Image (cartoon, rainbow, N blue to C red; front, side, top):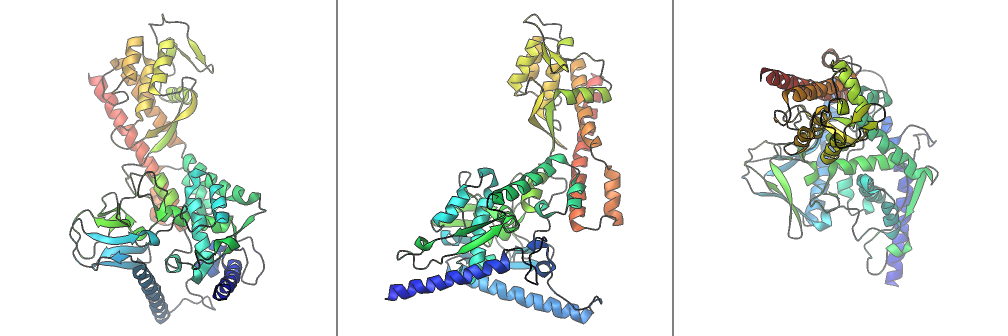
Length: 527
């Protein structure tokens, strides 16, 4: 009889969870009617304070609103802290979790902390993952239907389930701390802000994610219902709550960005996991803490001494601005790991040769004086390759058919031109099999490596410089124009401003690359 009453109570919990879906997940306007406006963009979601007039609020109004917000944040944080401690999580007494309007929640040192001290301990019971044992079979089947490259959507589905469960979720205090909007993520950019990016590789990635979200629900008619099922709650797991949720691309989009911007892969082979408290640490390439596995969980440990008031920061990885922007919604100025992407394309190389004043310079088989190993190979009527050149390109890992399948990276410092690209250009201009072989062997592709003749080296560098110039010319605006638009306020939208700042960094990379290549050309000419 007692078991029967317990299960009757669980069924009532399920009904409550179903009602919460209509309020939180479906595209329903304030009047109850359906709307085409995504729920994350509606003023009822975004606004923190509503007024009945268009009048500018007084200083007293602003003070009252600020105090109310602070009290609400303090209440949410207190509930979260109690939940965290009750589930055996621990936080160093000198660490405080605080809220900043511009950056959200973050961790700071409230007192001086020494290096190698444990700041946070997180047991496995406080980790939210998409391969845990408490996931119902119905939800697991949906997760398995998500391609591996969209791992954040896999984890997002679990997060959505917890959000729909509301107060019955074991992670409710954590979910309440998550942002309701992700203005910095390009997934949520307005079309005009996407256009401001002016960089095709990133736009392609944004569109790829959007297409996945749309296609994932297409077969279900735009929305999908996932029910944990009656078997999910049983005598072995009486603490569980059965949840049935109806989700669409809007809801999964929110959860996907939450997951991608907050999850950690503690081990290379492990699935990314949401780690409460630890996941509010901001990023720095000069991190002051790191996450590592420990007995029964994970811990956040200082990597150097911290002074009171200093932020506790993690390094999310040696990530380019593309990766930081897509997954976390921010960029880093002068990011040493940022790149501009090109592809190995012989047609593009021929175009670069024209603008670089090398249209008449022999290339491929025309440059070869040592072609006794067989007849030349035609590549799309663009470049004829001597057999030894074809073999050298394949050894480098470049497509000898010039199809543009190999991705190359341009950087602002170090080996500014992709090593494969520079090595490949040296091969194309090589006159002999021996010279092509030297160009293709390690240390291949390094600027300043004297592996080919001065004439070949200068042609390869000039072509590299022209390729960078072509990439820079693909942007419809100049670096100076972008900087002026940021100064004069002509770009008003925060999303558009972030997009302009992003493309500024790409142009800085290309200009720095060209300067470095030009200096190398001058060095070679002096030899």
